[in-house]
Image (cartoon, rainbow, N blue to C red; front, top):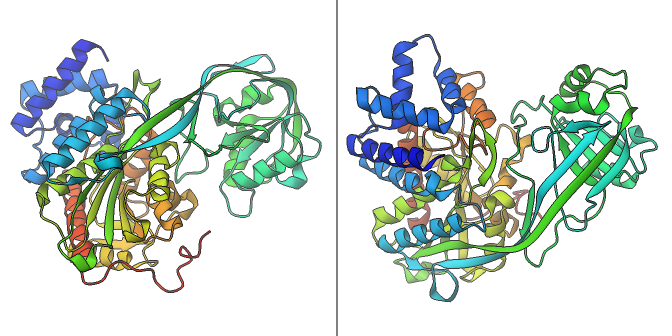
Length: 551
C-alpha cells in the first residue's frame, strides 16, 4: 500500500472511531441495500476478494455519503476493536516473529498491560520472555517438470530444513495415495502422492515413512481439494521453517513439497493420464493408479538461515487468596502473525486481525476492566510469539516457565475464533477432559449458547494452537471455536473465511464482523475467567481423560 493510501486508511479509521461507524460495515450495509438478493455470505466473500486500496476507497466514499450501520453501542466492544485496530493496522506489517514490527507490537502490549495494572512476569523483572529461534527461508526457487515451469508458492512450495538438497534432477513417479504396496521402485525419484485425509488411506506421516523407506528423492504431496472442511489455499505466503534454538527440525529423508492440484497436469504432461480425473478420484477416495511420468523434476533453491528471537509478553494479576497463590490461571493468545508475504489480490500484508490480534486485544481489555483488582487466584496474561511457526512461544514458556510450573493450574487459550456470524454454538476443546469444560458449559448455558465437542477432529485443531503445549505438559487447558449448524448460512460464511481470509492478507480490519457475536464471546470469556479464577477449587483433570495420558 502506498504512503498516501496508508494515511487515508489511518484517517478512515479515526473518522470511524469518532462517528461510531465501521468502514467495512458501511460497505456491507450499502451492498445489502442495493443488492437485497445477495446472501450475507456472498457479500462477505465479495468484500474479502477486494484489494485493500479498493476497500479503502469504498469506505472513504461511504463515510462521505453517510451510508452504513453503526458499531455497537456497547463501549467495551468498541474499546476492544480499537486495541485490535492498533495491533493489526498495516503499520504493524503482520507482526511476524523476529521482525521489528513484532517488537513494536510487543512493546505496545507491555505498555497496555502496565497501564491496566498488571505486574511484569517475564525474565528478570521485565514484561518479556525472549524466545530464541532459528529460521531457514527459501529466497529463490526455479522448479520445473518436464521442462515446464512451476510457479513457486502458487503451483508448488517446499518445506525447507538445514542440509536439505538444493538441486534435484530426477524422474517423476505418480503413486496414488502412496501406500507402501503401491510405491514399487521409486528410488531416486520424485514421488507424487494424493494428500488425502480420509480414514483408511495413508496419512501424511505414513506417506512420508513409505517414501523414505523406498528411497524416494522427493515426496510431492497434492494438496487435496476434496478436503472440504479446510480446503487448500494458494498461494502460500512464503516457504520458511522456524524452530526453537537448541532443537532440531526434521532433517532427513526425501525433500518435501506441496503441489497445487491445478498444476498436476503440468507435472504429468505426456503420460496419457488425465489430471482432472485423477484429482476428482483422489478427492473422492476412489482407487488411483500408479505410473511414471515422461519428464523429469528439476529444482534449484536458494536458502538463507539466520538466528532470530522474539519475546513472549507476560503480565500477572496477583491473586487475593494466599492459599491459592500456587494455582495460577494462564490466559493466552498469540501476538505473532504471518507478516509480509506473497501478494493476494495485490495485497502483501498478512495482518492477522482475527488470527490473533483481536484476542491479544481481548486479554488487554480484560486487564483494563480489572484495573489491578485481582481474583482469588493469580492470573498470568500471556501474549505468545511464534504460534504461526509451530507454537514456539508457548512451547518455550511451558519448558522455561517464569513461575514454577507446578504453580500453573490451567490455561485458557484464545485462538481460532471468528466472530463473523451469530454465536449460538461453541466448540470447546477438551470439553470432557477437565473441569474447565464444565465451567465453559455452565457459562455458555447461562448465555443461551450451546456447546459441543470438535465436530471436525480430522483437522487437528486441538493440536494447532497454544493450549496444546500445556496439555502435553499435563496442565488442564481449553480453547474455543465458533460453531454452526451443518448446511446453515453460518457454515457457508465460516468455510468461505477459511478459503479467503485464513492466513491471507484479507484477514484485516476491513473484513465484516458480526459485532453482536464479538460482544457475546467477549462477555463469555470475561465470565469464564472470573469463574475459573474465583471458584473454590482449581481446575482438575477428569478421571480417564485420554489427553492426560499423552506422552
